[in-house]
Amino acid sequence: MADPGSSPPVLPHELVELSAVDFIRKIRQHAFRLDHCYSSTQIDLVADEHKALIHAHRCEPMLKDVIDSLSSSSSFKDGWSLLGARFPNLMEYCGVVATLFPGTSIVESNFSIMHWEKDLFCKRLSNFGLEGVMQAKQFLFIEQFQH
Image (cartoon, rainbow, N blue to C red; front, side):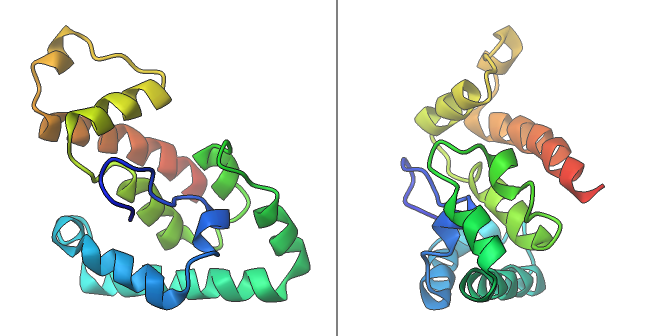
């Protein structure tokens, strides 16, 4: 959702700072990448859940406290563990968006964050191939929250 090379807002405390209009604007900025992963119906569900998250943050004190306790050092799992079941499409979208931006530095950074190393085989893959590997691994991680 942010520009390539920077960290996209993928945790709830960052999302509640974005208005619904700004969230949609960011989605549109990256529509050409998202079209490969999401239908327009799925994007609408994500946008609706973002609006619901903002509303819940404003109107539910306990949820607000949970969200406000997060920081930039919070992990994806920690950030979404209590909210993922309530906002599953938004959580999945935030997990996928983190891997959509092409470029070697992003791929290397993601490997570092996940404590993985490029083995000999992975060094021969293009960045697109590496993104596929990372998305497959991340899918398994995100799937944990749905069960």
